[in-house]
View 1 (cartoon, rainbow, N blue to C red):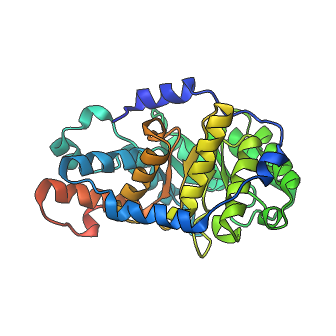
View 2: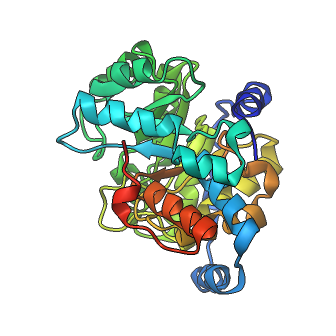
Length: 328
């Protein structure tokens, strides 16, 4: 299990993905075999299982890779403050002591909020290394004027956000306008400055797996630090087939360029068992070096409660009520 200091050190020494020229030959050469993708991911829930001590360790790893998120219209300062308290101590103190992990100083990977609450989250997380991530660029539809989207990024960075989750214009992908998509994402990356950029593809709205693979590559060439499946607001969010396509795009990109890009599935991952499926996918497709928060995140809120509940079951042999695992 990576400690907080080790996590920050890894992020500091990892060479950041640069902005590279758009290679349309590479983009247009991409093909995806849907039946092969579905056959591969069907093996994950059925063939890969971890039990007992190993399962507890993997669930702790999942917590460390979580973007604890609140993106509701009724968010308040109090909601965000409580979420930040949970980010600092994601599982109850008695469970931490029973598991013998107090020395790990376990925290989540980041706290993700709307721009309005960036300053609140930054203040609430003072004294920790937990970054604040802000959703931006007209989230979730991404259809506000370009100038406003750029200013929104800059405002969140100025308020203290160290990560920016941007959304692409889906119509650029659906029309095959790869130059337009590249130019858009490159402009967002430049506006982010030193803040790391997670690029949300909204895969449930991109039509085909080939579109998703091509969009993934274009965004990485434009300087994305992470590619992310979904806003969590689409009818279909993170799925294993889509995730496989995206992580293989990341693998191919690393093989061709030498640069590592992170991956973030978001939306619909609510159970501890599901979190293990995605960890297995990352381990098998990208390797252990990606199993750290600077290269892998879950976009989640409800997930943490179920993981905490499963850890209590591991310790006691009994399933507890959800009220024993509040978010703040």
